[in-house]
Amino acid sequence: MTSAPIVVHQPSRTGGQSVTEILGTAYSDHDLVVFLEGAGVDDPQGVLDDPQWVEWRGGGPHKWRTA
Image (cartoon, rainbow, N blue to C red; front, top):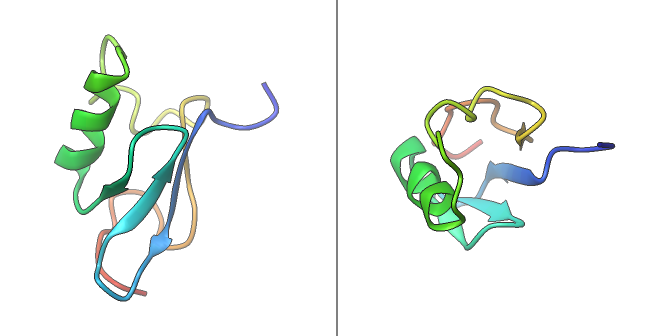
């Protein structure tokens, strides 16, 4: 795999972060977990720190405030 299938982009001015490959804009880890559950990921909480699943860009892992 050349990159993670899920990319969490840098925070926007509204505080949300676009999540590509999955459904929309997350404002928290909980939102991201909900997206992953909807996509059928068996352990959505467990993959948040797995770079083979989630690539965090901009704000860094678990940082949901604006940059």
